[in-house]
Image (tube, rainbow, N blue to C red):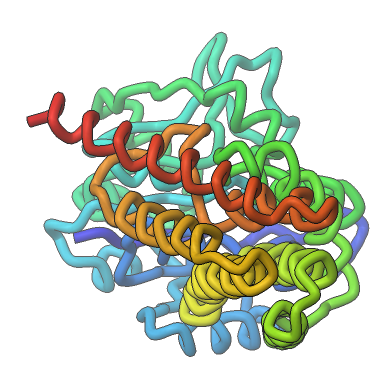
Length: 391
């Protein structure tokens, strides 16, 4: 049983009356982003420790609660201890923390008690010092017993600092902050201007999570540019989904009318839009729309390959291109369902569209389909071999 504890007590720097937790971040407030990370890590209940309640905080809490996760506001350790199940594991997030989903997921998987730490020389100025050489990096995985222990102390003690000290005295393990997380913008920040810069770092890290060769060399660089622009302009997730869907439908119609070059270019554009849109939807906590766009990429890749093969077969007067397209689609579909971690060179729906496009542009659709088929079959064979070795 996982619960989350978010601290939202400190004012933003240079903004009197504004809580740092309600500063804009990634197209939402910082506390909404933190709550989305907790929900993605499997947390079923969130407790928000506050000193005072502002309208902006109430609005953020209301939006978090709409995502089907229980949220409680508490003003003390006693209230927090009463809200959390005594056998729960509590993932604690410091006031003003910026991090990534992979970092929080890794900490949520840690057995209690564990504290994320960073060397004092590399720590953000807002991160609390633990000892002579280590500072708290803003995340801890603690037993619910620690909240009860803090609740037994006088209320004059600072809740966030005290729960951390109690965990340290209980012998909590120190988990070093990975260098990659620091490069991705991990840290505690309460300045609106600096927070905007960290937002871009986190968005870039989100785009970098896709590790396939097509994503790494083509789609991710584009998404890293598009995603901050979409967030900054507050583009709603449904807008990119519609744009990608329209581009995909037009691409299929163009291919069906016998224009392979223009059709594949439009299909490539659709994949770019759907890929960026899926990440934007995921960032906003709309997992359903994100999943729909990922499935849209898969469907578009299948239909575009089949239409390209059909068009090439009609032009050539034989069925070879269409048979190649069938093989490519079937191999990709089966490989995608093999329960093994894909290697960077494996074929995917996105890589199939990217691979076919240049061949279609130079009028060599059949050769492109042959290359896509070989790539998909090799990926399927490697995946099956990996499963065989694992068994």
